[in-house]
Length: 87
Image 1: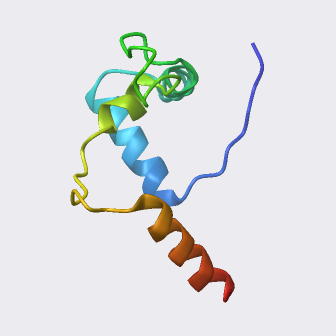
Image 2 (image 1 turned 180 degrees about the horizontal axis):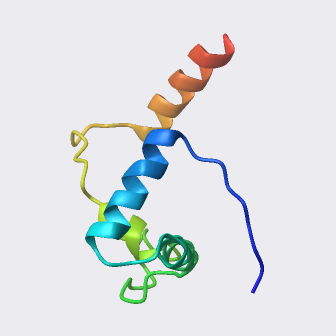
């Protein structure tokens, strides 16, 4: 087993420690579980779904935000990039 040191904001570390304490878990094991879950593709996502290849955690977020029917993603992306880069 290898060792890794990560730097977290104090409030994030405290929240993680409190969460693991409340759930009877070790912080190291919990972080390892999060990393493992993030790397695993969603098992129940049909191959024609846009969630294919996303972790289960991210897949659960899919569809949580509803855009208007006339929302043009490409136009919004283009406008946002133009604004950001002054083009």
